[in-house]
Image (tube, rainbow, N blue to C red; front, side):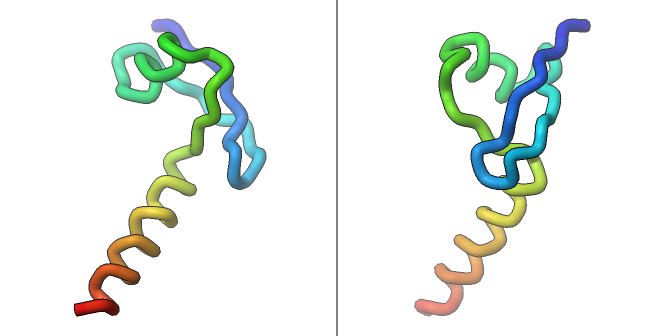
Length: 56
């Protein structure tokens, strides 16, 4: 199984992308791109849902 170590653009922690995941294919297409870890993705999604529900 192939993995790459990538730095998160928000928390600056290093995380691994594993072969077969969506982030892996995104990384393979653009290795100089900016990526976020799963923890930051969860926080962003939570804040977006909270903001959307606050407008209803």
